[in-house]
Image (tube, rainbow, N blue to C red; front, side, top):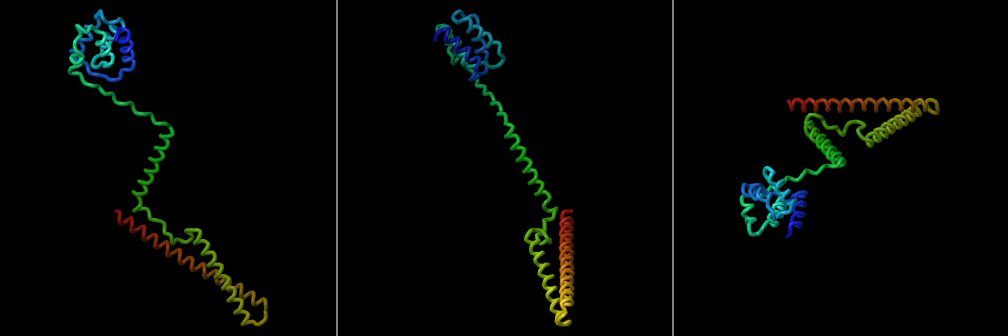
Length: 215
């Protein structure tokens, strides 16, 4: 390899160092003597000067280029020059996270925090009782049909009762039907209040027992 090729390789190696080795006294002595080596091109002598000023490490490619351009009859063996040196591995730079990835990670963290909070308070916060009145659309529809059926039944009972009592008086028949309708509505209201009160007592007892248990 001639001085021009070695100089080009050494310059490239300095720009993109690649493999880095630690400096020893032997390696520093070789670089110091290479600064005034007449067999080296001015560029290689300048690179040797720069490398000699480095405190603890040098690029291996640059060192090898200087060694190859040196006089083979006077230069030391390359193995002797690098004796005692060791490789220096640079830690890779962490990859920059994209904004989309950061937003996704924040969303996952918030979901994990909500889940952890639910796990933390699950023994304190009572679960919703599925038997609570109007807790679902099916319950609401069933309750409405039940009320309608009760009031319709009350109307029919009142109508035919008054018909049996007052003969062929349409007005009294209608009055009996209306009375039965109202009675049926009142009965359904009372039953609804009883069911609601029972559920509230059950819920209060459950909450109190949970709080007492966690104390």
